[in-house]
Image (cartoon, rainbow, N blue to C red; front, side, top):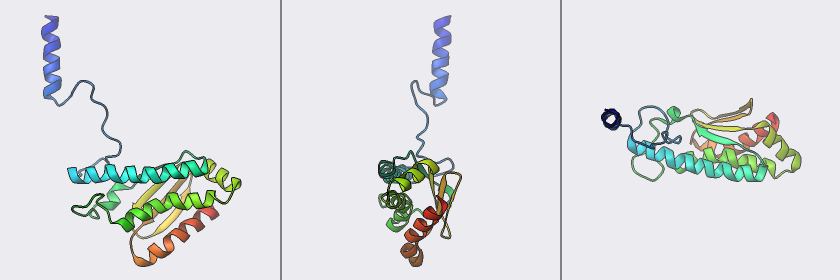
Length: 163
């Protein structure tokens, strides 16, 4: 009887889509209704952003993590390609981490400020603006020519003023 119950639960679990040993969903995939291609893009995009942040953490002695405001990029994904977002858009998100490296290269005081006051980077698509509040460096980016030229310097100014 015990064997029959175990077999029945195993069968029900498998038919319900559960598998033994299956881990949690990939945290790089955002919640919501995304196509398989978009999910694959988000994995690559998060890996790319994490690589930028890893360099920042090495340069600054920090433990910063980064993410996207995923829904803000809905409709911006391009068909085909490798990452789904234009290079300039991806570069603006990466510029958040790179601007922190530049600040940390200013010396030990700058490194200490970044390491102690920042713990999260968040990249959003929309009209350009940058802010640091309660350990969160939030950048709203777009790819208009004037923001590509001035965005990096604007990020640096916000960092230096806010830390």
